[in-house]
Image (cartoon, rainbow, N blue to C red; front, side, top):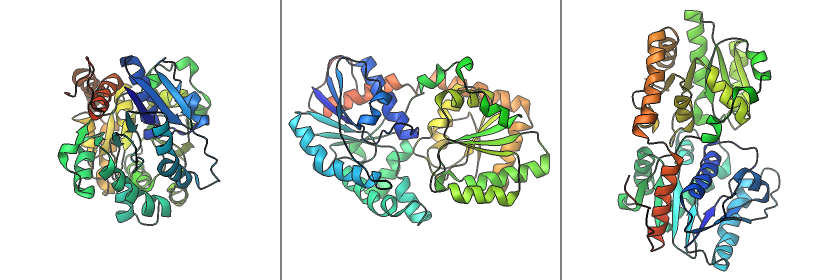
Length: 393
């Protein structure tokens, strides 16, 4: 069977959750499936990120000359108008659309992977903060893609429920297949890590990892951190690692207004730097108002970092009992959760232990397992099942 994978969202230098998902999914498929042939549709500049060293995985370069600021818009046009013709010409048996949207007029059966419906949430709850295209155009295209897809894969039970409620998609059309741990990140050694970052920080720290999207709730995080510091006088800094986004200007204004010198906004970091940040963190915090999964939670658990996190959306589902949860809209709740971990070494160690146990005993977050499930779903969608791939968990 010839299976196509839409990886057009993958851009060199971008390291968000969807980019991490695509990169690890393709590597996982290459390690578990030698029977099917794969064609990955990707931008030329993303080829080195994919690192496709498997004989049965080929990259089909899609040249897209995007004007500055119009990358998303032109990619969507390409996906809807050009990609279906290339799929047909290459005789693809089934397509995997890996990033929330698919070609509505795809000429073959398709599997649509929906990570989240954050754009729908932000359009309703944070209007005007994500831009016209993301708030007005993309939610409609995601809904149309979900209706057109033969099968849908949600990355969490929360996302599945959200798809059913917001898009009115029948539950029987949706499979849940969780994300995995980024093994490339785990293989980074301390010797190869960047040390310049730590010359700047110079003290113990709480870590957040992610882009500065409005739904990440970073404004409240810095306020809650400031509240905690004023009360407890801990020796910890707050380190925010991740690329600039729509929420960056407001975040920087908030930090300036608070007048704090113990909050460090690092911007995008390399895999080496990220691994070292996790290793040395005293606490990982995720204050998001909504998450489809929350990959940094799994990364933090894999490095043994205790976690304080929002009790919203998919987050409780991912962390289980390996985190102290708080109300993301309540500054007192957030500040108390962070202080409770930093001020109690026994609790900190117990959360670290529970994180390891959750990853090892459940074996739920494995890219090989994710890849096997998706291969089985793609084969079933295309009308064929190969030995060794089962739909069961």
